[in-house]
Image 1 (cartoon, rainbow, N blue to C red):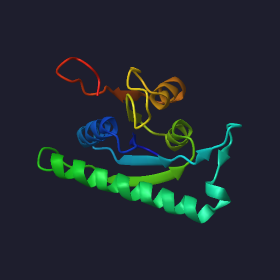
Image 2 (spheres, rainbow, N blue to C red):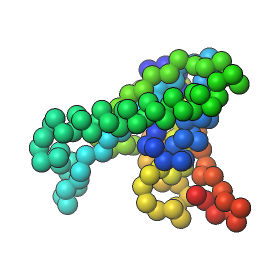
Image 3 (tube, one colour):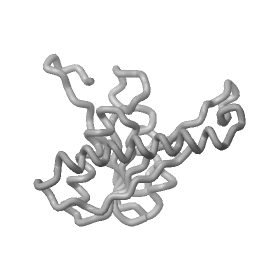
Length: 156
C-alpha cells in the first residue's frame, strides 16, 4: 500500500488524526487509506473469542464499524472541502487487534497517522496502547496527533 494510513475508532482524537491525515495526503498528493478495526471479544485466556462463534455477527459488526468510519470520513471531507484539494480516500475495516491490524495494513505505506488515545478508557495516559505499539513497531514514519487540551490544560 502506497500513501498514508490513518486509524480511526470514532473517538474525538481519531477525528483529529483523520483531519490531519486528509490535509497531509492533500499536500503530498498521496492516497489516503482509513482503517477502522472491529475488535472481537477477548476471553480471559487472552485469545480472541468471536461472538459466540458466530462469524455472521462478527461480519455485521465489522460492516457497522466500516459504515461509522465512512460517516466520520464524509464529515471531515465536508469540513475541509474548499480548503485543500481532496485526496483519494478509501475506507477499510478489519477484525482483530487494532495495533496488529494497523501494522499489517501499513506494509509499504509512506506514513501511519493515529490519535494519541482512542476510544479506550485511560484518559490520564499521554499515549494509548495502540499508538504506543504502532510507534514502536512500524516500518515507516508514524505521526501521533495529540489530544485536544481543555482551557485548564487537561487532555480530553
